[in-house]
Length: 159
Length: 159
DNA sequence: CTCCTATTTGTTATATTATAACATACCACT
DNA sequence: AGTGGTATGTTATAATATAACAAATAGGAG
Image (cartoon, rainbow over all chains, first blue to last red; front, side, top):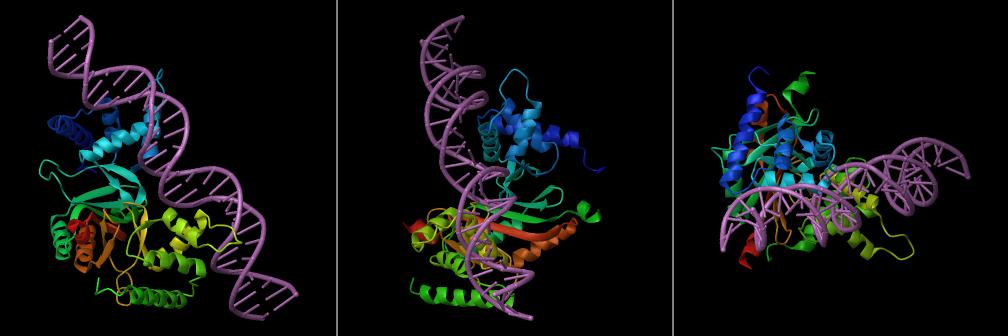
């Protein structure tokens, strides 16, 4: 992956997260940042309890180990800010990877590899438009759209 | 709902289910039919344990009450045949409501009302085409697509 | 600085969703 | 009737998620 410098990717995402939180009067606390960084560490979807395990691995001695509500609270916070998304069809979470500076409320399409867990996220402007028009045609008011494509990524097909 | 004769709807769906099962060498047993009929009884999405409660309400005295594996097995069977679909974003299930005779493996779009649970299902030919093309552009092989629109249906907006 | 309030975090317990594992029953075919 | 495969019953438990309340912490008002 010569074209993807992941250190820069993480740094940029973290900085953006800080700014976004501040601009909404929220705080990106240490716990929340930890969860975000775990999800940013690779572009894979992770379950809440896998994240919790990682947090426990990293936990500082002398304080209790984090419990489920800790990770779910951080996840809820990050979901609210749109910094992460949930893969509804497998109860997992991944760090948002589109340029949020241009699309405040984007319709995300997630392409999830069932072999390696890798997630690609694309913005669906045309698809969103079509869905909203279709909904409007029978009077349905859309609040939220979920589009998930499960399959096998190019890398895993080559293996 | 003058335009929707629900008795005919259920009858047709049940008959189609029988034929589909037979054509695949499977049996639409009493348990499976019961679960299907519970889901057909209105066009709402229901959780597995809600379905289980209904099964228990109907259960014949003299035999043990159904347990979770019973309902999940029936749901799995019906999902495999495409007679029902799962709303991944709320872990619920609804009876398929498109004309299956024409679309063996359709891309379904579900429009779920968060007020009343009503589900409308539409076939997305154009949307499917776009998604498969987008996936192909970066070498992703799609096995399954989930499209769910959460919102408020026309009826509930009017209330 | 110190008190006050709101937010965040810690902790325990429990709710909700789903499946594993194994025993029993049923059904179609011989 | 015997036999093999499918389906169901039953018990236990795994996996995902939240409720409820106590303790700590951070920022602002005085």
